[in-house]
Image (cartoon, rainbow, N blue to C red; front, side, top):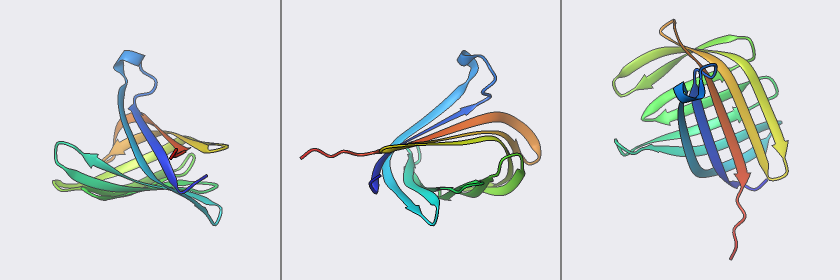
Length: 146
């Protein structure tokens, strides 16, 4: 797959609820993809339109874990390891929240010119259960026509 890619990140909370009750957020952007030392790296920026602020994201996919690092308007490093609770600070401009993620499913599909990562996990904030959540990251090779 090429370095320049189209990235679609879809996040959902409470994936066991009825479809009309699911909160979904989607980001579609250009970014970069690398495969190095048996790990996939997905790099992209997202903009918070209301605040004109940027968050730089790095998704690192290894054989036995996924790590999501955010820097900018939000700063955190979330680790997803199947069946293991991982805690990390989630720092915003208004303060810090301790978040916990318990990964229930980590699935990576690799196809020619495309990869799809799916994470199902439970989310806690300050040791209180918040929701069951799902993130799908789709990375597609960009075919430029000139």
